[in-house]
Length: 77
Image 1 (cartoon, helix red, strand yellow):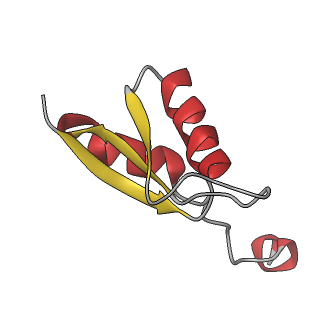
Image 2 (cartoon, one colour):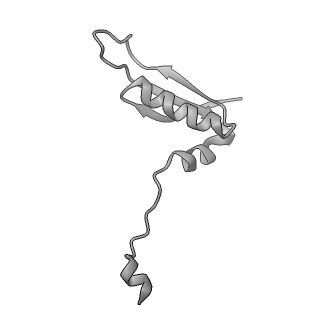
């Protein structure tokens, strides 16, 4: 099983949140710290990794929701 980097975040908590979202959908994920340990309340960059076969599913789950550009008045016309 090979792990691939899906996202790199500025803080660990962002990566942890994404990991929880993926695990709620039964997608294995792991978070690795990148750089030195945090100090004085500063966050540390982190990397979110998933298995290679789950890459596209994970990207879809973590992608922003596309909003419909048509307004309600355009739909009624």
